[in-house]
Length: 505
Image: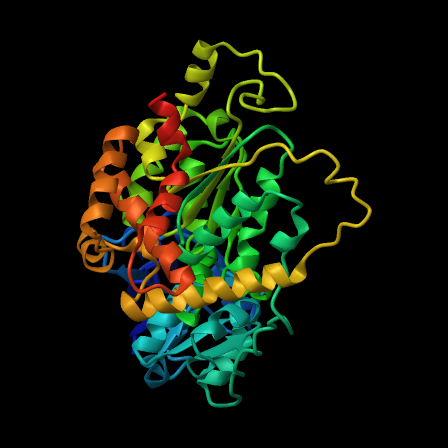
């Protein structure tokens, strides 16, 4: 036989489309030619493969070898196809039995001495390979990651010689080791660490229960960043499907997936000098940005007005849709981006507007210009606007103060109880309810309907803002175990729209 077929997987976003690797040996000068829209890194595979085969004690064909990566119109990047190319060449040359190749897929970069090096994007490939009921062979260094998709369909190898021995039936490649998960969940600081700020803590618990976007506004040093970092301590661990989605995004990014973070919600906090591409993703081939790396977790933007206006505006569509579509000349990639936005900002350029402890020296024009750095449409997508004022005098120096750990445990239990009600009713957190679901689950009495009409007129609420208030009120009711919305739920929800009030004064 001078022709052989085997399989690999490409990496297009978090998708891993099947790649058929065809090897044909024909008359001609000894060379390896790779076709099928390969990038430079793929074209260079011919030299890596040739050296690896030679150092494994075998010979490359002394004739022309053509490698076709199909489908031909799909761009191929990286060294992930090296192992599949080497195996197909050996099978076409008669050194390996072709029957063993049909139920296998191959991922791995070859070193010149035949060792296998790890590649990115193994988890999406392992998931889709398992669905196709084929065996996936990957480098040992990728074993823990591929193991997440199911160890029964994964085998690991250290070098090309081990792969050859497996295909010839001399030995059997081992399954990957079980992932090294932490013995106990990672612990984050709880809200008991934060002194005072009862209103801010209440807003944080509401945001955790309903997955609402949240903004803290207040003077410097009052605990805004500290509160934001405590949100993870209130959220439940990721479910297995959610954890797989998070791991898949990290698998295709430039960051190495850490098994110790399995099941933990991501927390991303980019600096305010970050670019729009770094935030939403891009380059060529497109890589996930911060909003996708925060998928099923938290994106914290500290000093929100210091971000470029152009950078902030790219958040508007992902906040609504839960995904980001990145289009390039040869690619159109969709990454998940269902994150919970938490932001922090001062009320003015000097930071002390409205502070009872220190006077503000900013003019109304400077304050307005500072706040206008964050557009109205973006603010409209932030559910809760929470004030974080200066602490009461003597609170920090109180020798008798001790953290109330029971308060944190009660808040966590309240979040879990409220989320249980939400998922039983709608299968999702309240922040993700559609307009039709809000109309179904947030019915108002006649008096409460008039209250909301007055609030829309007084605060200048948009239709989106109106529905967000109802979603917040629904979360507050769920936290209280109430079946119906009442006036106290609505008034508390309206109280957390501080920036709407400031625009009308």
